[in-house]
Amino acid sequence: MKISKANAPHYNWGDQCDGWHLVRQPELSVIHERMPPHTAEVRHYHKQARQLFSC
Image (cartoon, rainbow, N blue to C red):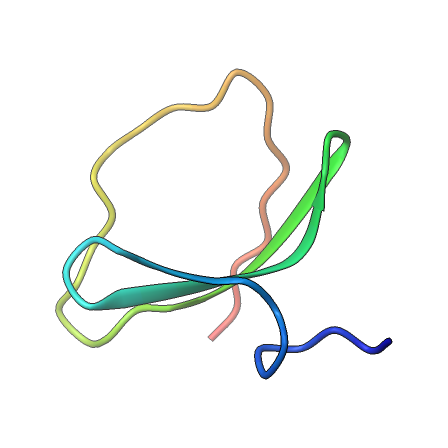
């Protein structure tokens, strides 16, 4: 099955932000996020992470 926002597990976070888990494995996590204008993440840290951001 092809995974996309249409069928991925969804969650809400922050102030009106959304996330969809496209891949959720111990060694790899891929999340598609939507952040409306003027929203921001709370500063946080990861022990280990590789991140890609796109607009």
